[in-house]
Each structure stands twice: as structure tokens, then as C-alpha cells.
Image (cartoon, rainbow, N blue to C red; front, top):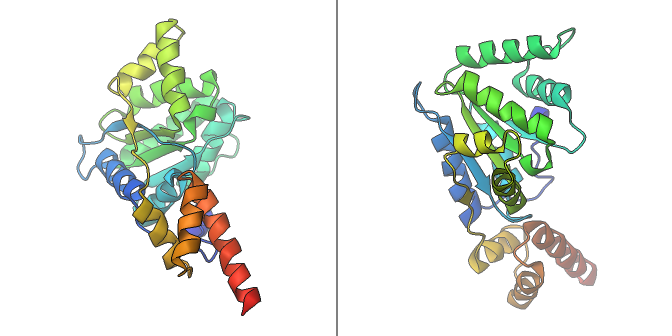
Length: 233
């Protein structure tokens, strides 16, 4: 399952952090455990805070949880094809309308499914409108999460202010609020370095000072420092 959804640590040890613990719990809240308890969340956090890795981990560990990493080039059909693939459904020969009906029917047959639309800020308006359709047809049956940087919050609120089509409907369906992830602490970043084999306190401090709390940067610098230590040995 992990390989199918693209979840891989590539030899990198994942560590529970402030962001990952908070996001994991929010995803669990959205998925719920009983019919009728599913939630809809819009969750935002800065680039590199660990959103995608956490969502991938959650999907790998929880039944009926589907994680999509959205892209700018997706149109409506591409979005549905990606969702059907994540759900393990055969998409051959279906029209867009048929795919929607198939997906909704399948999700309603499952116990407490969850769809996480990661990097949702990259979606075009036409694809983002599918969020409204899915909410309307799956309310109380399926948890829905929009996961993105704060650009999505700015985009939606600006669209509401400018009375752009669909934006007030989207804002309403997420409860007119965005949940902001607070970011990882110094100790979170130090624990990541240490768990992956870096013991030098000064090197760790330099990495954290230069990372701007971006865990991709922490990973890159940690690997570089470990490589340097191995060469010197």
C-alpha cells in the first residue's frame, strides 16, 4: 500500500514532530470512526513543515484514507482519474459524470472514508469546484481535507471578497475557517537530525539556524553533514 501511494522514507527516519502530531490528529478527526461524524477541514502550513509526509503516513496506516498530491496541470478528468487510482478503482472507459457517480457510490459503501487533497492551492478553479460537488454528495459519509500553504487561505478569502464564483460556497463548506499548523520547534528539528545519525551539537545548531524551519532543508543539510563526517573518518 505504501508503495502504491508513493510513501517512502528513502532510508530517512521520520520523527514525530509538533506539526506531524497535530496534523495526524486533525486527519483522524476528519475521518471519524462512526457514520455521521466525518469532518471537513482546510489545513494550512508553510512549505517544508512536513504536511505531505504526514498525510502519506496517515493514508498508509489507515483504511479508506486516500491522499492526493494535486498539480497545476490537472483538469477535472485528471483529478477524478487520480482519485480512482488512489482508491484502487478501474477508470477505463468512464465519462466524467460516470466517474463521479462511481466514486460517490464506492465511498458511500465504505466505513468512514477520507480524502486528503494535498497542495490544494495548486488546483485550478474548475477542479477546486469539485470540492463543492464532493461535499454536497458525501456530507456525513466521507471526511474531506484541503491541505496547502497559506496561499490557499489568501486565495479563498480574496475570492470571497471579490465575489468570485464558487468561493463563498467553498468557504462555507470548510466552516469559514482555516486551521493553521504552528510550525516545528527547535527540539523537533534537532530530534530529526539525531534520529538520522548526526550527533554533533554544533552541526545540528547550524543546520537549524540555516533551515528556516523547512524540513526539506533540514534533511538536505543533515545528509550533507553525515556525508562529510564519513569522508573524514
